[in-house]
Length: 96
Image (cartoon, rainbow, N blue to C red; front, side):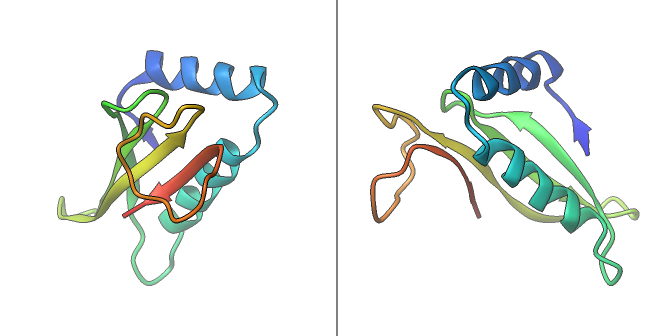
C-alpha cells in the first residue's frame, strides 16, 4: 500500500486507536488483500479525502492503469461523510 498522505494517515490511525475502533484496520486489511490478487495484482494508493478521518483509494496496476477507485470512509457521530448508508453505523467502511 502506498500512503500518499502520511500525516493524515498517522492522525487517523491514532484516532481509531484512541476510540478503540477496529473497523479501520479491517478495511485496510481488505485493501491489502486486493493488492495480492493473483489474477490482478495492484498497488493501492491511499489519499486524504474531504470527509473527516476518511481516505480516497485507487488501485494502480503495474502498467500504470487505474482500477477500482473508492473511499475508506469514516461514519462518525454525527456522520459528516456525505455518503449514503442504509442504517446508522459508527466506524470505517469501504465505498466504491
